[in-house]
Length: 510
Image (cartoon, rainbow, N blue to C red; front, side):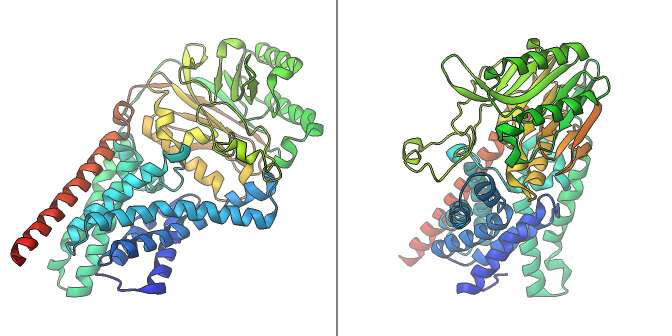
């Protein structure tokens, strides 16, 4: 079945399908939308040419990212110092740029499979989508938000995450979308004759059903003694966070919350809980070291650090010194560093983001340690990337991540960010401890279940006994490369098949 919508009608349906896809992600978690939206999109491109497919993909992207990442407006206007009209323009440009990715995916699919053979076009559709999605998570530092596979953290395909990762799950979802399109086509064409549509119906039913047993596979096993942890969420508004006059109040809030904790082994403060360069605060550093020693716990604090060469880092600093320190390796473009620094220095009125010219930490940093346990550390943006967390495996017994989601206010972002952190715990079967400034802080088990959490706008602490884990999942061994390699092979086979059909047609014409 083709929807047969030309012009603005088809563009509007593509736009609505893109917006519908956002429902598959947190906070909605309506996972069937990750199948329905691509099925509608495939129906739209079933018989169209590359140019039309490009436009439909772009409209789909406008709907997907226009709704799904609309929260960037708040970071630009409320905290980035950009006036509202300019923030609207920058947000619109950002969304339009992201929409280029699904546009390229559809253009490539139709270009590879230009003929009416539905199976070749379907194969090219699946492979192109997955490969372009992976490209989006890599190019210019990467932006993996709304990668389709992440929706299954709350769906029946979640058990595939430790095996084939989010890109493999995206491929499965798109295959199910093709089955849904095929089912609709057969029902439309043949009505109640069930023999014509039983095949795609069985695919839609059996693939999720057969995936359910994978959810219970552990892949890792407990090791050593349990670790009691405390997570502190100060709920300090972003507008106050970098206000020098509020600095002492910030310290008091975190100290008071930490003092309220029972006896624990590890205390975690969020990203930039101390929003100044710790090297300029020797008294604070001494006090935190004394706090950790007096209470006999390890303390991890988000702050900024400076090295001997004058480079600044977004840092997770341990107390006492034996815990170690971790400098963020994967920085946010235009948020923590400026790729076009020389150009932007001529327009200082555009951006007023504190500590926005940081250096990345080295790839060979020693891991954080609490006693005999090794912690796999990540800061904010890094937890969105499976490859960044994989770099800490298998040595990490527990994953810790800190974030400052107050940049995005009361939007979808904190929920989406938590969903991606849950995916990391599932992929590598490690418990994950997450501390944020204003929410959502959480303690997550190896199957991605949130054991405890503090929501947006809450002030408080979490405590939990965590059992360290050891062992590798298949994804930890090989990463996402097998899934991406398979998609390249599918695309090559689809192209070869189309070339063969073209050659046969040419011979017939002769």
